[in-house]
Image 1 (tube, rainbow, N blue to C red):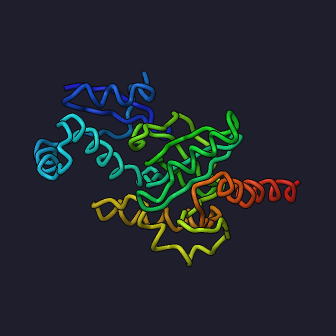
Image 2 (image 1 turned 90 degrees about the horizontal axis):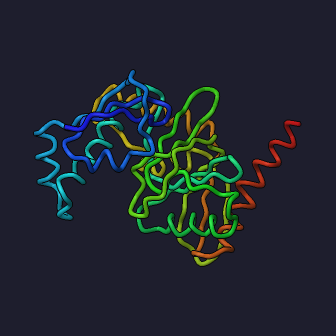
Amino acid sequence: MYKFILKLADLPVEINSRYNFSRNKVKEYVTADSNAVLSARVPDAALCEAEQENVENRSSAYVEWVCIYREIAEQIPHYDRVVMHGAVIAYKGEAFMFTAPSGTGKSTHIALWKSMFGEDVEIINGDKPILKITDSGVTAYGTPWSGKEGWHSNVAAPLKGICLLKRGKLNKIKRIDAAECLSQLLRQVYLPKNEAAAEKTLELFGKLVETVPIYVLECDISETAVMTAFGAMVGCCTEREEDAD
């Protein structure tokens, strides 16, 4: 058994794993902090059940790795945090999330941001970031659970916009009210099986959509699509800052 503590979304988390695979995956997040606030260990029965559902014939070590993520996702709502399915980038220190069903083009879109803006853009997480949601705002954190590309950074940034991606022939973006996207966006949030944690997740989700601007981007996979999103999301942030001054 491998036992270690990682700092995940500013929470010390104790991990107990059977395989060194998980330890290697999270090495950038391992901390010397000895006071974990939560722990994750996959029971034998849960691992056995997950292996039976393993239609892609992944290794037992990989299956445990995924189960550890689920164990953490079940607990973190009690600490004002949720896991979302989406890709998060930071542009000059401010985070923007792009979310959509798998296969829509999130990875290609954020790769274009990185290609076009270079060091001004950092990919925080390509698949499963953690969001900390409080009355003072929303912060996006990188996690080692980051999709097939493995894009993640152990960093955090204030979340300034959420963009729902849709494929389209023309590139156009609009800001929408939360009511227009509740069901679609909620499908991208990890909803725990535990009733209390699920209720807390819904409470945090409500605060998220009230706090962070939400956009719908219909686009192809092109630099024009990136500039369309950039103009609306980053430009609006700049205008808000100037108005505040």
